[in-house]
Length: 84
Image 1 (tube, rainbow, N blue to C red):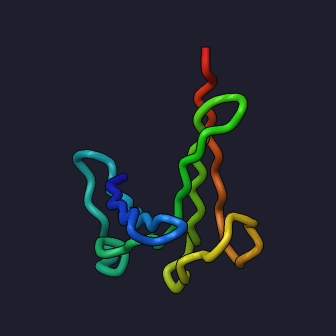
Image 2 (image 1 turned 30 degrees about the vertical axis):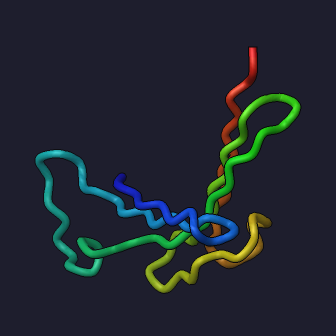
């Protein structure tokens, strides 16, 4: 997976570009140019640093506006790095 970040918006924007496994090719040209638009947020919590990413896993997906997971096909992932 490749990604690009644009922190100039609130929330920040992330574009995810799936890559085929090494040594394989993607037959469908639409999948070769597939970019999944998303949003991200990094914030400090009382438990540590939290990264939240939301994107729509669909060829016609629009960039989510919130992290609520309510858009059709929307995926939301939260990762927490605990402070020691």
